[in-house]
Image: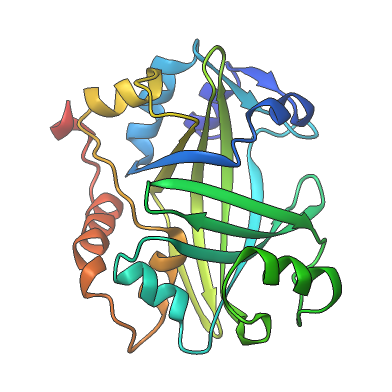
Length: 256
């Protein structure tokens, strides 16, 4: 058992049924990128304020996500341009609970993320029936133009604040798989703070304390930029350099 897992064993658990109270399908999202050592330091300081999701006795959950895009990667291009009112379309498998969903995430021009989903155990190979109807109602692209773009796999801890309406997802062991290319980002931790309204909770105070700045690159865009030759990535260059720095160097001693 690694150090972060040992620390998380000290957290009080929360189960899936209790998690229904913090679905936050309409919310604000704030992302942070940092090292595993920083993660362990922060965990020790917030363990009394949060509970950790436990599914079938496990606190680290496996996620397998297939993102869909057009042949010309139009959804990726919209993100690269910084376009507001943009979409992500994906199928996500929750390995421990053996469930799956088709999900459409919409980021509006007010900075809010709205997620809609329907149950579907396996990633669709074509869009028909209820799946096609769902996509037609929730996003602007013709369903037949949406094809598999990249697999994004990782493991996740989910923390829930004991008194505030806040959920944290902590992603580790990130892996991108596109065609014959596999890229693993070991040592990187991605935290996403999901709130109904932005509020300075315990975790966000720790981000400020250790000078860990918000980083907004999506895992989908990160994966396409790292595995696809020929795609535009100039607007992501600074963020990709930050990723490399985090992975190559442990920066916690210089951020205290």
